[in-house]
Image (tube, rainbow, N blue to C red; front, top):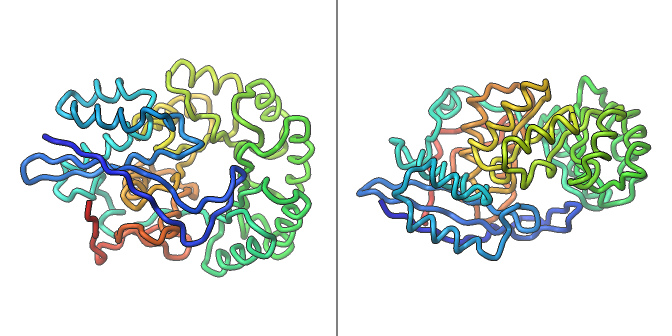
Length: 344
């Protein structure tokens, strides 16, 4: 068996705003495994400025993996502990090469086009007019769960936007999730959460920057809105450390991005630990191409979590790969009439 990797830049159709700045391109890597006439694909979707493995030796580690691809997968995953996005690419590539179809990693009713996954509609940061336009489009498309990224424009404007939704739609009609990406200061966070709670918000992701365990624990105990940890999970590799963090902070939810937390294996560890502490969870993509998104979606379907998942980012790029993944209304479908077109 031989392996190769290739860097690829995904181009956004429209510049997308987060509290970490405006994104125009997204760098990713593809792992290709070849064994005779069988080919497997995986995506190592490192996220610059966010991933724990955004390191100068990233390509060096990929080259090491390609040289050692014939070793036992458990040993490889252990060696790649500090490179969660490469772990995920490796898991995908091994499942891919063992499958009859390299893009059917978890055969199910989803991959047979017989069932779908409910997802949230993502509202990117931007001007008030731009955010209003996105909200209108998502509601018109049929989404009943909206996730708004907040923390980049004036808080009063963001409150006003959320109020405008609530004036038209009750919490039973539209579920509102917000993601602060660590944008609030600990000193102001609780007051902001109290104001948001008036608008019947489902949950808030990462209100303050990660790494402030005591402050986050206090927020989780006092917040009138359920808090979901997101960035907080990044870079926590050891099972004991994961357990300690959840026991210390006691969040209401955790958000799992396989590319950032060690693929299926790393995500499954988090789910198991959260479940023992009655902490809720859902899965979110992290701007992967359709190759990575496909793997996440197929795996997510097998978990049978009925909450809306965060898997609707495949249509953001101009140069994504043609795939059967299709968003219709608020559901992600796998349309077998559309064939994959991947040339790597």
